[in-house]
Image (cartoon, rainbow, N blue to C red; front, side):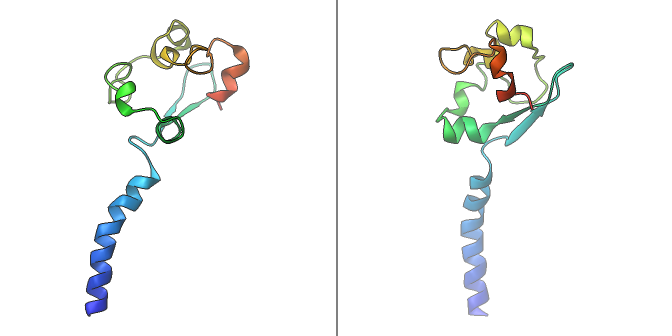
Length: 105
């Protein structure tokens, strides 16, 4: 009985950290643009691999609710949304057609 109680307490202490390590923030977000392949945005890649902070995008570039904005490539190419960083200076340029496959799958 004592062993089961200790295991239960350890589980309650460790599980929240293990669960949060699986995904960052909103996890992956799938966009299905008209006339283009699907785009899967990875919070994990942008936060953990690239070291970006949530506040670098949220409320400045994006709202927190998915679908609260209308994105399209013409606006992205003008520097809105993803184009704010993917401009060839901060990150790869979305205007360069050789980069399409980096987002669209």
